[in-house]
Length: 236
Ligand SMILES: [Zn+2]
Image (tube, rainbow, N blue to C red):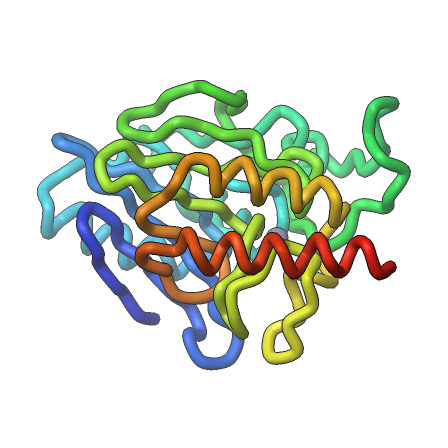
């Protein structure tokens, strides 16, 4: 387990060398907001940060429903019973085991691994909602209800698996040989590209992702990754 800190953002990483999975703690003036909880061991590091900062964990926000982002949620709840846990309404259905497509969605199968246990959440997230310093942005594609969080303290975007940086920066569903798993787990490429553009439009100073290190000043690299993804779409 590895912890990196930049500005008000702590990135906790499980298996940093083999299969990195990230959890983020976004420090607020008087509280802490946690993003994603793929493994229960993250809770120990979150508790350490809470103790060191003497701040209370108020929320756990989930970028999407995949198991490597949600499997530790129930353990988190036992350790932080007062924290409110949120996920998008669309991905809540996936947590509930409903993998059917909505009438307005592309006819592509939803991919990736989901927790085998019932994951309990408290509220749903919607585009434009603010929670502390974070604004929710709908960024579907990796899953139909994937969201990102724009932090107005650091100008970071915490993008979940809309992008990956492990194996090289890529839009979700772009194959990176050194770390191909986000591609395999992604629902729809064109939707991912549209969301990647939406994230770029926020002009983040920091890009935080589910798998791989934070990227500082990421705009140019993001634009390149989007261009490559669009080229891949055209050549299909
Ligand atoms: Zn995922």
